[in-house]
Image (cartoon, rainbow, N blue to C red; front, side, top):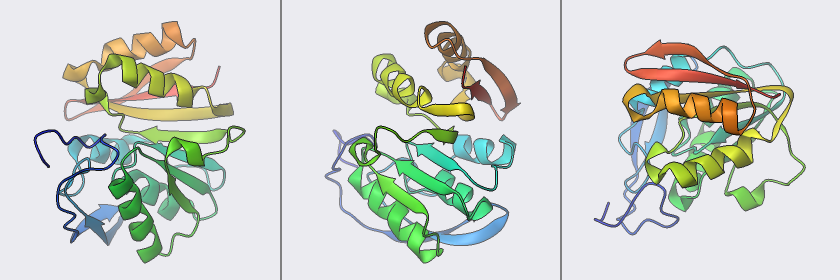
Length: 201
């Protein structure tokens, strides 16, 4: 990444050098492509690993959202676990979206759609949201992001968010409860991270 590049930059300027790594998703070893200029370019980051380990198994069917997909570990896990579900993988980073598409295609996961926010119709509601949200974008942007997408949980829908304890998981939990009026509790704690469970009101 260049000095001014961030994983939440729409079009990173760093060289697009894809490489293949082996990771474990949904209980199986798979090979995926990663690249510079995206979140966690070397493979599976600690926070996402905690979310994938701790969140309950997704339902067999439904409409799911991976909010801030990176190269796709959450979306791929959801699709591998629930092949009949529709999975939307959302990111602002075009390189991340391209990698998610390539990885889903390589694994034969035809029900994964990787897109920017504009590509998700306004009337789509989500039965499940999994996210390692981009805390480092700053509170204002993060709150706007969560306000937008958590409000699109379907009746009975649930979201699982993984947040590092020392990056404000407890204050984020309170904000979701107070500002969004959504029940939010600590579902799990592991390796310095909390997994928050948010339910549609």
